[in-house]
Image (cartoon, rainbow, N blue to C red):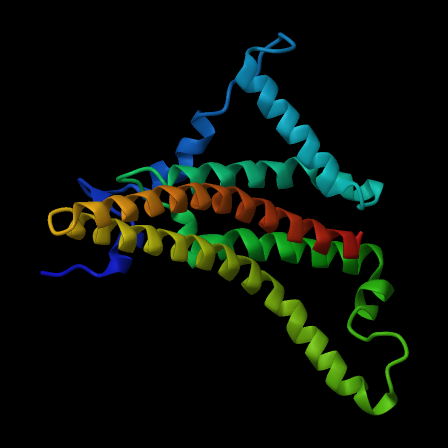
Length: 227
């Protein structure tokens, strides 16, 4: 029986236990535990440097009240990076290739930024639905368009992350199957394909990190509009 290429995105089950639960909980085990010392090792020093610089870059344009979101947004970014990178290992499962999980992250975070804007500055939050200087005949149409674009934001967040990771995994699998098929027929061609596969894997590592950063960056931009 031939398997579909998309079967790799189905959550595997071992002895009746869905492995997606392990995949979602494992990233919390790879981070070092708190200690009373200033620096435990080079890994923790590099992680601290990375977190501090990314936090400064993301929250630089956001006003002081929005800095309360630093912990949850940086934690979300580290979690997404960990899951995306672990999903590139052989015989693993990537939960972020599932649209339902990504929407579970995107919708509550986006809704929280909207609620904060409506609570703290309702006039300005509603003012985003109608650009200043709009001609009177275009007001109803623009309000509808801006409202639709507002509700599309969480969908765009989830679909962007899902589509990029899914496309990368499919491309890696296709090239890997081609390299395996050409190994006995044309070893030289197979070697070239394997080289391309290695370069593509490096690209997917960068994509896994960049997509997690973009996900959090867009959430920070939504927060900036409502704080």
